[in-house]
Length: 139
Image (cartoon, rainbow, N blue to C red; front, side, top):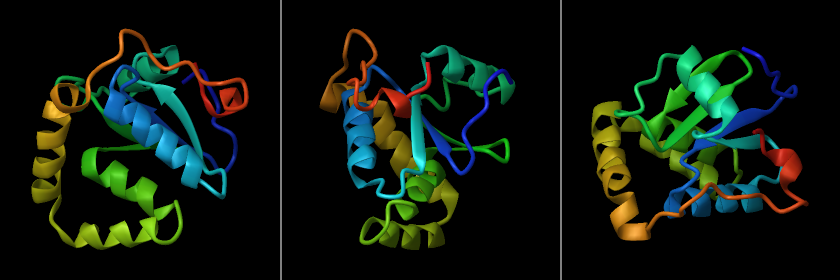
């Protein structure tokens, strides 16, 4: 791949036109006290590069991915829970849901993801970060 993630960082790939996804990114930014996460839209060059590198079918996974420096990528409910456990207390308590089998967790996740545009709406273009947050986003 043609980019390096800074040491100790994790990259959240999100649907840049989804209002729910954008709200979730804002929530993570607000609660990421250890400055662990960076962000990029799935529609960005970095996002497209990772999707291609990991051969991800965007018809099956199109809302959130978590990329770690160890060159690993996780999706759906596993990504959401791994993000939550890095946000500290009380969000870290969400890790308890790892006891639920991924098949069941991902069914609930997919149901929400499938309806996210209908329930929360959609933007015409990807979110543009403010100048203060620009360093947290990859293009």
